[in-house]
Image 1 (spheres, rainbow, N blue to C red):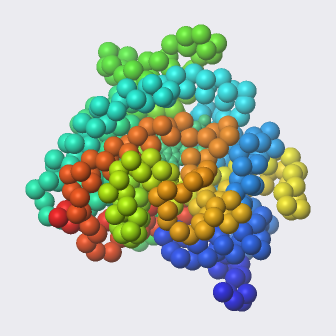
Image 2: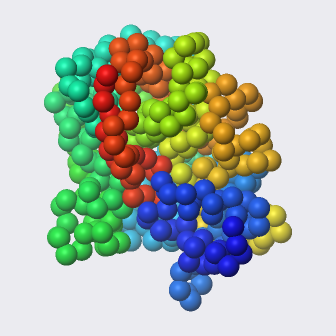
Length: 421
Ligand code: HEM
């Protein structure tokens, strides 16, 4: 690796095709070693963002919402944000994931009731049944697209169950999630004029269509629910019990939107990325298939290896110093999980895929205040899917090149051709 290779252009972590290429790994390795708190800006305007690549710093930021807040921005790395094109989509302070304490603590206490270990375990029979149905559907085919036909279907069905979305509406919610979270990918920019496809404008429009569409869909669903549709989770939220807090209609709406997105895209990429990693490391796959009791630790290694959420952003509430870099009030700070999860100071031999890695305190689910609410469901979905998949199709294998998603937010595969036998 030569010094000359790294300059402002090669270290552009804002490029939409960043992930899925070796470039990202190399860039993260370089940043961790030389520039762990790195300011990136495009052009001459003094507008840019800080890149955080060390594990310890991601932990520090995640645990200090008083210094570096989620309430102003979390998704966009660059200081351009959806409300700039659509004030109606401004979810700051209404969305669990964009709240600070003390409101966040109170709301989290309320929603935690739907995500306890017993709530997760209670769903296992249903998750196994859904997985069985998905595998039944592909049984007679020789070749399938693992992402579309397998990995995406389980998380979609689970979040729809949680939110109470009827089965017939799963395809539309899938379509809308793709628009929201995969907006940088031209394949999901079908509803913008041909001449702008692949441009930042197409990304903005696609994301806008996704957010508006999903909100409208959820609003209609919530109206239906008041007409008597059963759904346990949202009903639980409406009833504050002894939590000492209540939730507004707007907050319920945003929470349902959050679950639809956070629960689907992430787990889809963990399942497909995990299957890919196992195929690309046949020794580890053999070890697992010979001893499925290794699955819980294999799932943790998959989560570390894939790091399905690549980054979350924050904004400094005042001046703060990290590793002798002065971060000023209002500046945007971006935490990179695929870098923290490969930090040589924390993980021994981080670029080795080891299904028995121990300890494995990865940050794939984030940490602190906003640490993933749905981690229990995600782990269970991965466990059930790999158990059932290898039981039914022990010889399933890749059958063509994976087609990586064009994104610097989600580490994912768009299509993964596989042969079942
Ligand atoms: C492999 C799958 C998953 C990964 C990698 C993942 C990752 C993450 C990460 C990194 C965060 C932290 C965001 C931050 O600090 O700003 C988060 C938060 C969250 N996740 Fe997940 N997630 C996954 C699955 C799920 C599922 C299945 C659900 C719901 C069913 C879910 C719901 C949430 C929610 C509601 C939050 C916000 C929590 C809060 O702000 O208090 N996630 N997730």
